[in-house]
Every structure is written in structure tokens, then in C-alpha cells.
Length: 196
Image 1 (cartoon, rainbow, N blue to C red):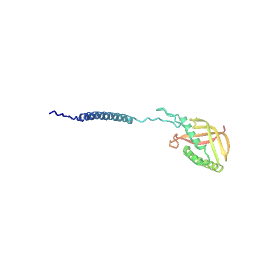
Image 2: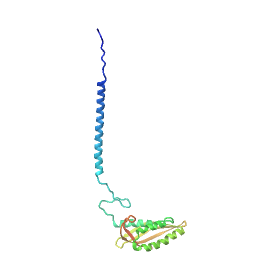
Image 3: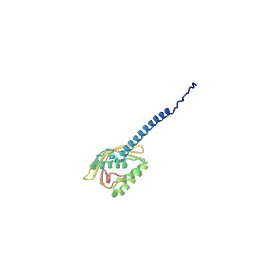
Image 4: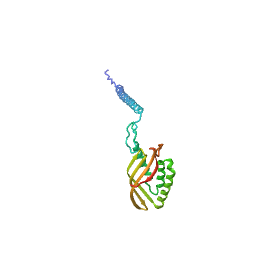
């Protein structure tokens, strides 16, 4: 009675070992993911709770020092440059809009005289196809007398014929309210062309 018994080995221990090994790998990735999420949440909370960095800059993109106020003569020069760009640089198609926008730099007491003066300029520019450009060389600001002396070159083109000449302007100004069109609060009260 010699019978051979063949014992069949099961794969259950091998499968259990593989399952336990895979489970350990998944636990490791889950813990690593949780730690990274917590770290990201902490960094994000710190970043969001900080106050924003503000860099105050001037109209010419220069960084202002904290607590430093811009100089008054610099502010006046910037305002006058913006005014000159609107008042003295135009062509027939833009003359109305530019001269109208320049009104934001005119003092209320001088606005009626300014509108009378520019009506003639706008009409002449459109009738005769006049283009004008001003290139200021020097702006001298006298804060005590509230005057600015502007010297530069003016190029005028009438129906394609160009003429260049010197221009000297004397502007009287006063301070006033600041607004989006005139952020400097500088208003022209009187303007006259002077002899160089």
C-alpha cells in the first residue's frame, strides 16, 4: 500500500505577502501626499496673510521712497509737460479732442478765455490743414511767483509746408484739486508767448 500523496501548495501566502507589500507602498504614498498637502497649505496661508508689496511710482516710473513726497517743482514740471503735450501737439484730426482735454489743466476763472482762444485755433487747423508740434527744451519753475517759463522749438505744418521756430511761453499757475485728468492739481491761469 504504497500510495503517493501529492500535496498541493497554495498561493495564498505568496498573495498575502504581495498584498501586504503593495499596501505598505500605498500607505507611504498616502502619508507623503498628506505631508506635501499640509506643507503647501502652510506656505499658502503664510503667503496670503502677508500685506501686499506696494511700490509707489511717479508719472515717469521712478520709484518713490517710503514717506518721501515728490518735490513741488517736479510736480509742476510734470503737469506743464502734460499740458503742453495736449495744447501744442495736434493735427487737424485730433485738434478738437486734444484742446478739449487740455481744459483739465486750465483754472476755472480762465476757462472762458481759453475756450474762445482755442475755438479759433481748432477752426484754423481744420480749414488750412495745420499740424503743430512743440519740443520743449527747458522748463524753469519759479514757485514764489507761480510762473513757468518754457523754451523750445515749435514745428508748424500748413498744408504740408513746414516751418520751424523758437517758442517761449510764460505760464502762470495755481494749485487746486487733483483729479484723474489732472493728478498734479496744477492749473494754468494765464499763458502768453514771450520774446526769447
